[in-house]
Length: 369
Image (cartoon, rainbow, N blue to C red; front, top):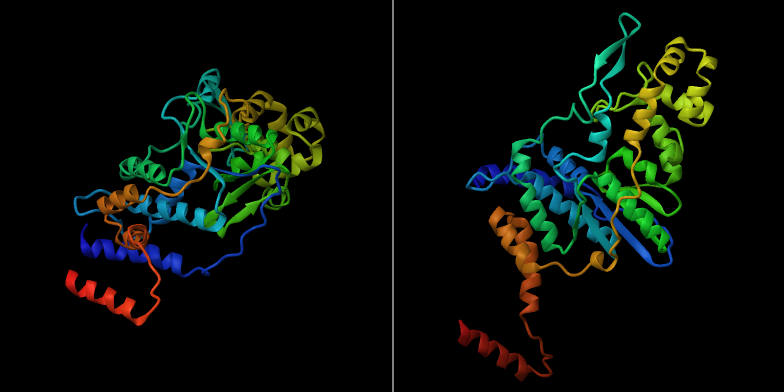
């Protein structure tokens, strides 16, 4: 790693951490019969780590391997472990392959868009689910194997399911965990996850000072309770995921309509009662697109997989693997924190009961030098 380049980037990351209070009060955990399970929405975490360093000078090794996202991601993991001491923990990834939503979206050929200038709805070609998402940056792609190695070294299992997105896997595991008496913390900054919140499931956003979203917080953030989040999403759509929604009905309008009618189906059924012309015509003319949007936005909590509780039980990190990874990526500050752990594990301590005992030890030290 270029010394100057490394110094600027690492110092910036360390300054960000150091500028926060040394100890943020932990949110009160949900009471449960069995314990707490933490499910990391890995790509949400990784993109957050990547963009956290976007305004800083990049970090890379001397051989040019980019490392900024890995560095921030590792620190996020360490903070999660330090702040919450999870009993059970897993990281859930998306699979780089089409999901069932892509297949369902193939049936949609056109959608309507509202033109603000003409105040008219226009029919346009539908490019498919998530068609507007930009390709993952190359320097982030390079770091994914190192991030997976970090998870392995921390003994955090990596979960993924072909044909489904990470949201669906997390929703399914959360549902099964609650049925077995566990409480669940979905570690994510993705608002889509708020639909999973209930008395036993919360969404935790560590980069936002451990923001914990229970049902009350969801309503504070979005204006509707968790069970109505999908209805709001169905109306407002999602430009990044290319979910059309109801054209002309934005964030404010979607909340107003759902609070008034209770669900997206009820809003569609009573569209003629809506006073605002844009909203009324959008609902009257876009029922299929809105219902399609609700289907796309709804997390599938019945993915064919089984919750392995014991496989998620937290253990001690593999120090040697961490040391190898941090050495390869030239994470000097993280290596220094590992040294005491390694040295203590190789040291035998005995109690000095007299001055003669102390002098004997000193003589041995002098001879070994």
